[in-house]
Length: 251
Image (cartoon, rainbow, N blue to C red; front, side, top):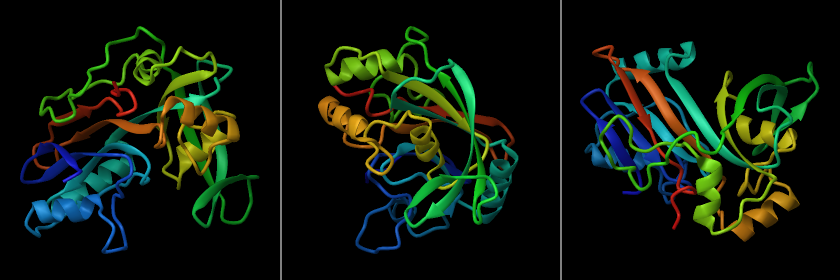
């Protein structure tokens, strides 16, 4: 099973999806998290609360009962189920932290930034912060840990470059990201539109970002849902998990 289970009880699962694995696929011949977990559970109930794009890795919560699914869905809608992302981008924002506000419209398999008022457009709001080097230590190779912290996303700008065996280029930035809205391909589209395409992103990348992705050996989109925080639907206690992205942990 490619899916890694980091937390499990009779109500919920918290899992790590590797890049390249679909959350749920319409094709019976294509492996996906949902199929793997249903097989693991012996065909029992599995509630899909949220998803990640196939080339993106990260943490996802699943429900094992309809009651838990309803509770987690409410938490997601109310912002109680909190997710933090990290991305390695080509370029650097003018400010160390800020907000991107765009209007996105889905066009086939991609999203596009369009003017406000465009038919079919939805408002997309993203908060970002540059991750300073030296802010913390990255825990490497600890994705299977059942502790509250199964890795961290600290110090990425240093560790990503070290892991790739390259000197730190001045135009690469590691960002912490939080989205206020959940639009299709929101992070990938907004960062690319802002001149900071994510390394390894073949849909929204530029010639420069894809060339450098190849040089660094980054084959998947360098975006990770690296943190999840929620209230247990039965007990109400807080559950927190954090991982370090695979593109940090390469030797």
